Amino acid sequence: MLRQQPLPARSREAAPRLARPFVVLFLTLIVAAAIFTWEPWPITSFRLFSHLRADRQQGWAATVDVQGRETPLAVADLSSGLRGFSFRMAEFESASWSRRDEICRAWTAPLSEAEGRRGAEIRLYRTSWQLSQRIDGGERPAPPRRRLAFVCTPAGAQDGGPG
Amino acid sequence: MSAAGRWLFASGSARRLGAVRIGLFSLLAWRLATNDYASVAGQPKALFDPVSLMKLLTAMPSHEVAVTVQVVGVLAAICAAAGRLPRASFPLALACSIFLNLMLNATGKIIHNDVVLTLCLIPLVASPRAASSAYRLPLPWRLRPAWPPTAGKAFGWPLRTAMVVIALAYFLVGVQKLRFSGIEWFTSDNLRWVLYASSDAHSSPSQIALFVADRAWLAHLLAAGTVALEIGFPLCLPYSRLRWIFVPGVVSLHLGIYLAMGLDYSAQALAVIIVFVDWPLLLAWLASRTLTRTPGQPLPSRADP
Image (cartoon, rainbow over all chains, first blue to last red; front, top):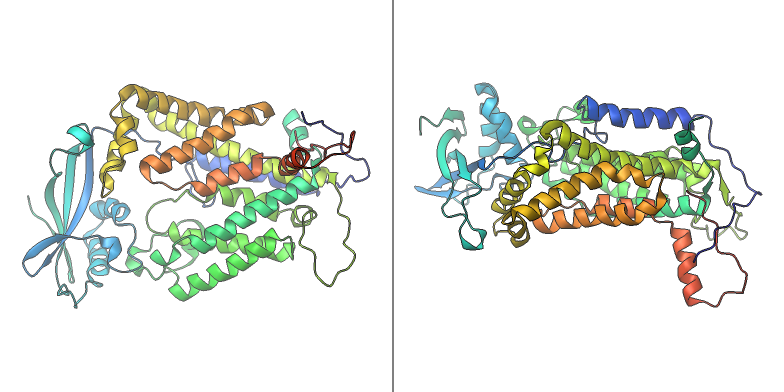
């Protein structure tokens, strides 16, 4: 068992005069950010997985038409700096058409000419599926249902139609 | 003064604070060196969605700026871990870290992976002299090392503030779950849906996530345990024996989340270990197990409650 010894008396360095107000302010800010849901990073509101999930899952999928063949597109892999596709789509859905045009131009610009994709459209599908529908091994029985919501071209965004 | 104030500003060990400095700044150096800031550097202006101080900029910083800040940040963090130039290296390392993390946060989502590490560094940055008193890398041209003070009130509050920050972080995460979802967070199938959705988001299913999600009783148990661990964490501040439960508990939680969902909260888990383990006491205990100790020779004092 470890023996506890009293602290030596030879050194008694005091805390700085401003330490107390600093600590009070710092800790108050952390609590206030959580209460008022502020995000002045590195102080955050600490909302991690705080909202309930439902059985019905919704998401987004992007495809690109390459020479008449539609293939899945990982927007984040187009070039560096295009991270955050899933987060961006949350904004995209409710954004104005001018804002959608801006985002579409940013996404379509890096499509590679070498792969024959320059000028190609990016199709944005709304996907949905039931999380509880599983087969043996936990796999989903079928791909998610999808509805064409938007089409991104180098000129801007277009409505995907009734789908 | 209140009991909390007396605890927070009680005397502390210079060595323990020095060990925490080495640990946290070394962890920061590793994070700055290995995080992929290039994935967002040079992002088109249309996709720039800044938070906090990044709103002062009009566009995402370029690759060149990101790499420069990254190199300066790593060097400053190494310097800070060594206890050298503390008044410059501590704030510089922290500023570089905040800048680079704000870049990651400017893509439409708040990223929490490095929040706790960054917040724990702030009390150290506010006490550079105290935090660099012990275990400072000696300069080769200085023949006589200065004897650092061993204990005092200056060394207690930065470490205990970091402890409170960690306790608050877990507590607030738990409170926000109950605030926005109520007890349904653990009484409903919420965690099962989280795990199924996480597995579906990966190219190959996560067998651990599916194992838990397929068993409702296990998902409920883990969800309730998670909230209890988060809400209860502050108890280990006044009752130090509870740290033997809560610290391994939250480290296991982060390990489980990583294995099941692929979310890397290693920086947070390591920050908890660095702050809550009494390193000088542990080293002395290890030494006492391996070396012959003179009978009656005392172990180092445990300065922090």
